[in-house]
Image (cartoon, rainbow, N blue to C red; front, side, top):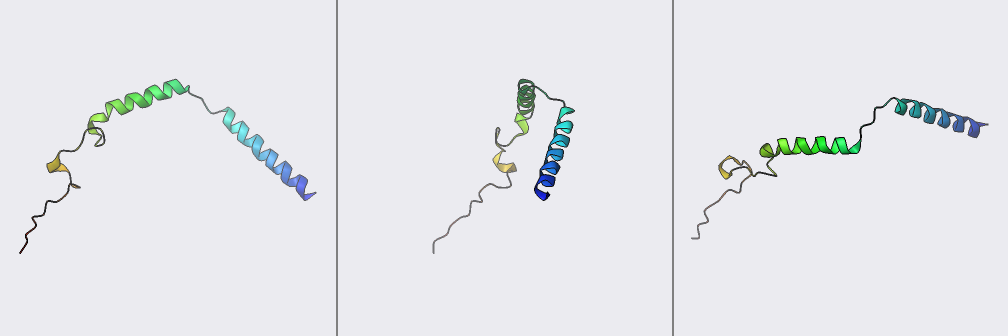
Length: 70
């Protein structure tokens, strides 16, 4: 009996999930990809991976230490 009850509970959860998914509006992949592309292109100038930060403004640049041998 317990096994049947768990199966019924799982089936109800699945039905509820499917009811929720029916109401979700779907967008075509091509539209989403074009939106992502336009976003990336519009923000490329401020992206440090695309256009590097100038050395004087870069807080992570290597510090050049002068080595003195005595």
